[in-house]
Amino acid sequence: MQSVDRAVALLRAVARARRPGDATVAALAATCGLNRATAWRILTTLEAESVVACDRRTGQWQIGVGLVELAGVASVDTLVGSARPVLERLSLQTGETAALAVFRADKLTYVDEVAPTSVVAASWKGRTVPVHATSTGKALLAFLPAESARHLITGRLKRYTETTITDRHALDVELDETRRRGFGVCRGEYEASAYGVSAPVLDNHGHPLALVSVWGPGSRLTEERFDALGEIARDAAESVARPRSALR
Image 1 (tube, rainbow, N blue to C red):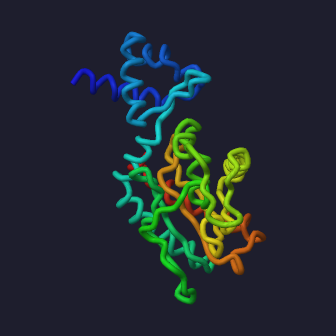
Image 2 (cartoon, one colour):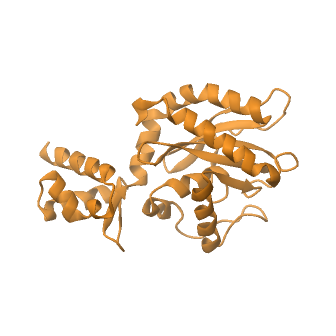
Image 3 (cartoon, rainbow, N blue to C red):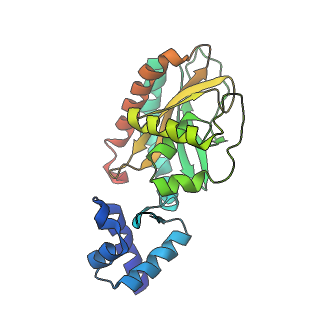
């Protein structure tokens, strides 16, 4: 039980760290009243399960993708319920399909969607998608802690269409732009006919709990609409996150 208490205390200290110096082993150990060796042992054990991640260049610890995944599983039903009216408004406002995705079991999966009655579209609900070739995945990568994002894009970036980003530097540039504007875009990179924008539903630490997206065919959802739709998706994502204090 003592080990569990210490692990939980360290997790909380990592989550609450705000300044760079607050997240080193020494600082975390001091915060939790542990010696450095004990803190290091617990943190590396948690890292092996992807619950925390360490940037070896700076020595800073951060919440890992495994904990984000667990949060997503625990809150997915609540998120779907709270997001449903937001998706309905988003679809009505844009005239396109609005969807909600979460990251769980090492996969990015669409868990709900609303399509306009006037639009005939294939359903993405229940489908998993690659993180480097979709607006949803790029929004996830852009707002995850850097080490957690790198964990998800190891190895070769698979090409799905002619517009899929397969160069790692080009992807990094795209993710920087995604963070700057607050939403990701997709130009037929996973399926040639599917264009879209996605914005993250962020917790109070700035980590993604889910992703809200708007998508449709490139003939209708053109690049000229990306900025306007991205802002709408970003506002929708904030609407999902804002009243859900229980998920913070």
